[in-house]
Image (cartoon, rainbow, N blue to C red; front, side):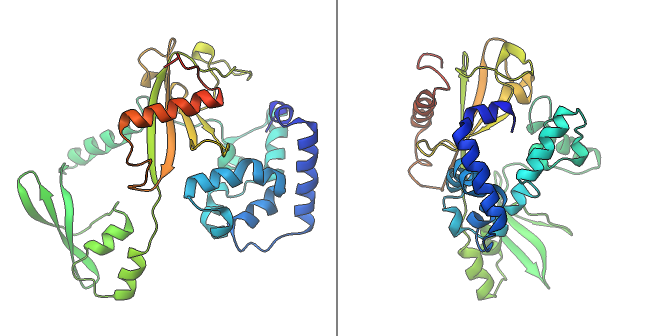
Length: 302
């Protein structure tokens, strides 16, 4: 939120947003769903502009169908008042990441060559401590005893193997974890796990010559591209949910950051739906068409 935001919204929309925010402060809605949660903190106008469409894209459900506590942790203490305080802290040059809401942090540490470096470091540390990383091992069955996991049966390049251990850490979807437990006899637990809905995620990477977005910020960037790491797309006329600009995460992730822009286009979907089942070329063509429609790139820029 800054002068450019207010200029982009225009006087009429800004006034409507302000009055609807005041109305929301005076007449709080029962926070029985995520829609009411957002309206209570931002007012109806700002909710419709920034949260309604994006939330539906992200979760595949309208905000009134989602529990208030489901997404509340994502915005945590963020509110109009928190944004106003952040604006004044910038003007007085007293902003400190230690005292700002997570959603408003503007500086953070990031691996030089991307988040994959984190797992490369984990691999190195595990081996330094005498551990071993087993790749291409797909967990097939989980054996439990007295409420603890005792072993896992895996499909491996050498065939089926059973691996035992004292401590197991799972990163599997809970649905798959419970389904894989051979000794689980609690039908209620299995029924709940089987009914969990999951949302999937596809990133389409495009290397473009330039973006048709002018850098109006005071912050200078390599190649004078806009300084954003992420751009959230609330526009309901496109499926695209978010744009990542990898040059701004780290220029070392791009071969020629002075001449090209590497972007990741994030699409939210469900496994085996129409978008999920697109071929790579179909995804790329779909993404390019939406970027051209939004004026982010020109048709000849990819």
